[in-house]
Image (cartoon, rainbow, N blue to C red; front, side, top):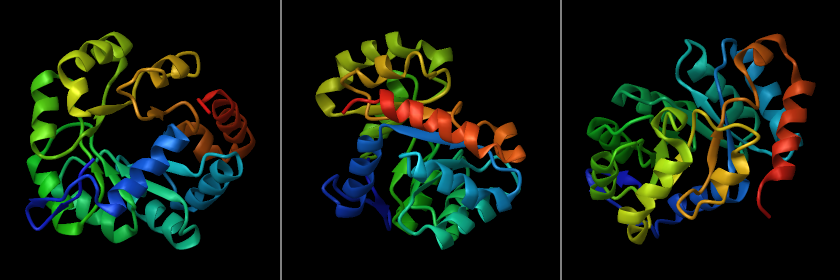
Length: 227
C-alpha cells in the first residue's frame, strides 16, 4: 500500500504505511462492520480488542459511520481504526477528520487516491480485474482490496492473479464471501495479506448489543488464523 501526498506517490518504505500494513497483516482478519448508532461504536471496539482482534473497518454506508469512527478514535487511540466503502473524495476527507488511521475502497478511484494523497492517509483501493490491479500498481498501491471476493471467483481468481502480478508484490485483502470455514484457505495464499470478515460483527448484532456473540466469533477466528 502506498500513501499519496500532494499528488505524489510516497514509497512503500513510508513508516506510517508500513506500520499500518504490518499491523493489519499480523492481525490477518479485519472485521467489516455497519454501525447504525454511534453509541455502539466504542462497546464494539472494546469487545473486539478484548477478544484479541483490535481492528475494524467501519463502512461509510450509514449516516452514523463518521460519528462512530470519531467515537472510537477518541476513546481508543491505539485501536487500528479503518474506514471503508470510501467511494467519493469527500468521504475520504470525512474519514480522516473523524480519526481513521487507514481507508479502504471497494474499487479504484483516482479522485479518492488524490484525496488520500492530500490527507496522507494509508489507503487500500479495490480491484477485481487485471486492468484494475494494474491501475492500482501504477498508482503505487500494492495492497489491494478484492471485493466482492466470492462473486469474482474467490480463491481461484486470486490464484490466477498471482501468476501475472505476484512478481510485483501485489497482495490482496479479499472481502465478501469470506467465511470462517474458508478463512484459513484464503490466508494461506501467498498474495493475501489479510481478509475482511463481515460475519464477525453483523449489523443486527451490533444494533442489539450482542457483545458476547461478537466476542465469541472474534475469539474463534483469532484461534484459527496463522501464527
